Length: 460
Image (cartoon, rainbow, N blue to C red; front, top):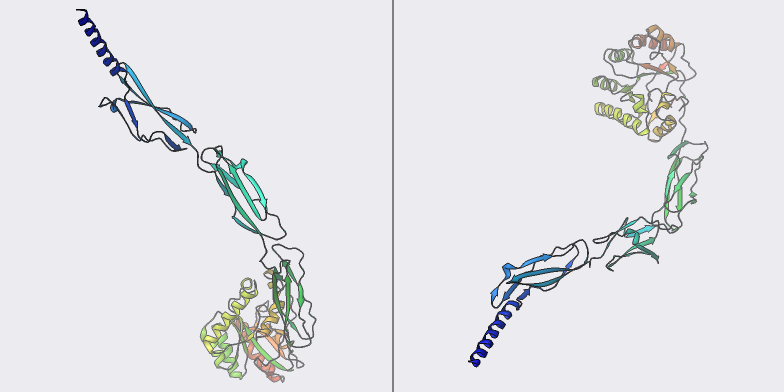
């Protein structure tokens, strides 16, 4: 009997041990990839896990606890818990958040900077940022060595960044020379005073200008004055000024000759009648035409043997005299009109207002001084007048025009008479002026390229 009791007790203890073993025996946690390393800013993604015990799968019953603080680097736990019976079992996965990313340094300006040989580099600025630490600009260390500037910074995770800016001390830019004044045209026998030049340089100051070349004012020709500058780096610049010496235009040397000249036409009702009178009196005249009026009258002037000169296309003082370029644009425009109508390229001109005009001062100081020489240099001849009929001013009668002309005639010189073929009182006075001239021993001619110029004193 006692033996049976012992056997029963042993069996009970055995089964009790089995039950205890079953209750306390831990499950197997299979964590895929084990402990994990994340870069700062990267989010944790569960790689997977499995929990088994005695062949039974408990995975679906596992509860996870995530203790990660994504704002800070460090090592964090992810706990996997499961309760079996009255026992709770836990497995921990270690997640380490690290910062392996280097800071970024951004330089203002170029990585390669060229400066003057005698200059010191002026820092253009920089900025350093880090994915974890943020703005690290104040922690950047700068070192200047042998033409290289090193910028370096280390973040809190000991990640280091270094970049380099190269400084090249070099000057390949030549100096800039600016002429004082323009190319010049002067008359033979006058004096020439060079206006010089100025120089600027990107690196050097107080550079000297070397001037070479001479002008022989007693000999007609084209002369060149050269201005040359070499900077401290050996860069050379030069500019040239052209000085033309021309013959001073001869004044009229035909005493007793009358040149009838008409400005501002053609005009229907006056110019055509004037042409009729000239034809009947067998007298040739000179017409300084504009861009207005009928084409056929310009053709008639030319076909009947008169000189078709150039006055102005627009007769707009502000436009014509605002610059030399504007003047020539206007001049060539009226020259082309005459050429297109007649086939003749006229080079006989009269300035709007004459060469002595002062109205041009409002728009360009000194322009008449320049133009009176330059037009001659370009092959033109310009003609002013020494008798004014007054028909552009207060004289508004044919008798007034007639008297203004005949009282000013002289046999001791040539007589270039200023009239306007757009005025009816000039038209009506013309025949009597011609008759007076013929009756008093004067002759009539038209202006040609062989006619000596009659010019005024230039006032601008």
